[in-house]
Image (tube, rainbow, N blue to C red; front, side, top):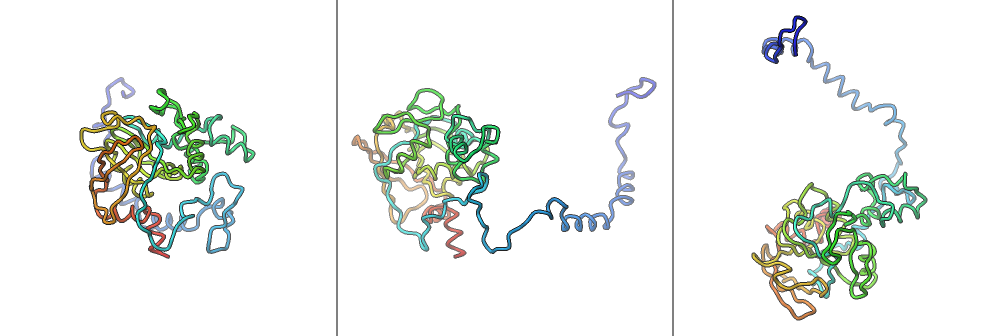
Length: 313
């Protein structure tokens, strides 16, 4: 900038000295200021204090709410974890490539009018103007499950083009990912996802693991993972499987239309090699991509939520 006479002014000309800063702190920053601020925080504000809080030990879920819903993560929780169950005759929900991001998996943006989440909200009396975003409705598992893989930029090799859809086998129907997963669940069919390198890259997003879990995904088989997302998969009870170095779906001749079966050893250990069998007769090895014994323990519990629930029960 310049002064009134046109002379150039630089930051060094207006920057206060250390002595000036210290003098201002001594005059203005006092213990009473922090005490007063703490008292105001504890008192809250008028709008906060006017909210009515139910006098109950447990939260009374509002069954009509489309924002906060009792999630289904604990519906099948048992007091003790059982033996690890094999994955038998699983279909591939999605056949994905490299660099699938958490936003591809669980978008946080607006809810498209033609999406499965939009249909759910419409059936509950909401108009498109009231849909809001997936990020705003992350407290509703029904919306977030329907929003899983609902990104229009998701490239599914089954379709050969970007679309939030997949193919149901063996019917051959092209459906929204949620609708296909729902049909598989009705048929009692477990699901896996095939992917390439850097699966789950991008921002840390817990629903990118919780959503696939609620769709019925038992395992992801990828060339490599983003570390935080892999932690989230383990934390929700999805097995992170990895191709052997130098191998991938293409090199093994996998189409994604076959079914997959895999058994876990009773003494599962980090990085152990497992045998994957397909309905076409192809057999190949995969790595159980657990990095340590803690991750194995969490997976045996069905994830972190189950582990914590059992610990405090």
